[in-house]
Amino acid sequence: MLLSAAPISVALAEAPAATQAKATQGKTVKVELIAKEVEVVIDNEGHKAIGWTFNGQIPGPVIRATEGDTIEFTLKNDKANKNSHSIDMHAAKSDVMGDFAPIKPGESKTFSYVPEHAGVFFYHCGADPMIQHIARGMIGAIIIDPKDPNAMPKADREYILVEHQTFDNPEDVKGMMANNWQHDAFNAVPFQYDPVHDVNATQTLEAKPGERVRIYMVNAGPNEFSGFHPIAGIWDRVYPSGNPKNVMVGMQNYTVAPGDAATFDIISPKEGAYALVNHSMRAALSGAIAVLMFSDKADPTMGHGDKILPRP
Ligand SMILES: [Cu+2]
Image 1 (cartoon, protein in one colour):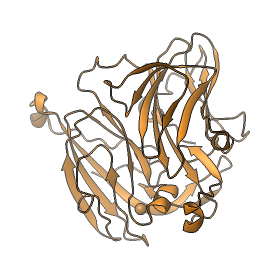
Image 2 (tube, helix red, strand yellow; image 1 turned 180 degrees about the vertical axis):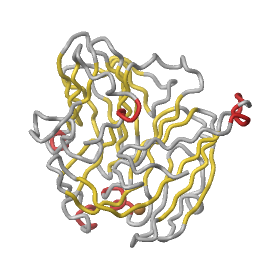
Image 3 (spheres, protein in one colour; image 1 turned 60 degrees about the vertical axis):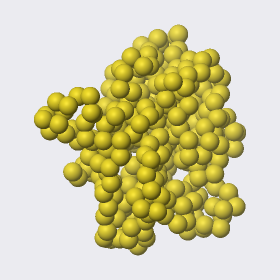
Image 4 (cartoon, protein in one colour; image 1 turned 90 degrees about the vertical axis):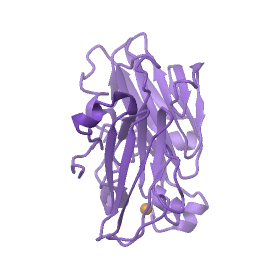
């Protein structure tokens, strides 16, 4: 199945009805990612640079399935590319030398796995040098919903934030190894959801007071830990790796390591703004701030469907 070229693609394909009838065995979810070295928008002003991407977008398409499903995954390396690329799926038990090994431009590979644990997981390219493939944009999120729909409180809205550091010179691997990054972004564009710090930002995350807002936060790194804090709020619940069995309550900050992810629930009793930040100040003031605006007039489409990962 080819993913659409739309700004957001949810890489899901339901199996035929006959397969679904075996309800206890889960369904088959077909996912296809295409490595593409293409121009992408890098700031709120619309400047562009050549990114290394999955499906032409950073982060790549959201992969979503349910605990016990089979994910039938295909990676294609576009023949127009100059570099080898690979996939590393943190939701899988697989083979780093086989399924996760790089493929050359024009090649493709397919493998299947059954995600055993519910949660939120990182996926990325692991081709050498991995630090560059991550920094240039080959990053994304996998959500594995629990089989039991009551395993977690029902979320009224959901948002995905994939944080990563970016470098003005994407060819400077030495600078990447020295950790000389210039920007830190949620979903590729610094201050994308923060009109306070960047007048060119056009949107915020939105919700109504009293709604349970669920943030799937993936720290793509490549290097920095992220102390994820909601300024003016408190995390109602934090689920490390997004697993409903790993629940913490009343958290002001929870550290998400590079290559890790967690699910954060938050509720505001009143109208007003929270600022979701990496509380490391260099990271926040370099772009890792997202405003979550609570208003009775919140756009009902935000935090649902394609708008769980709002794009410019
Ligand atoms: Cu790559």
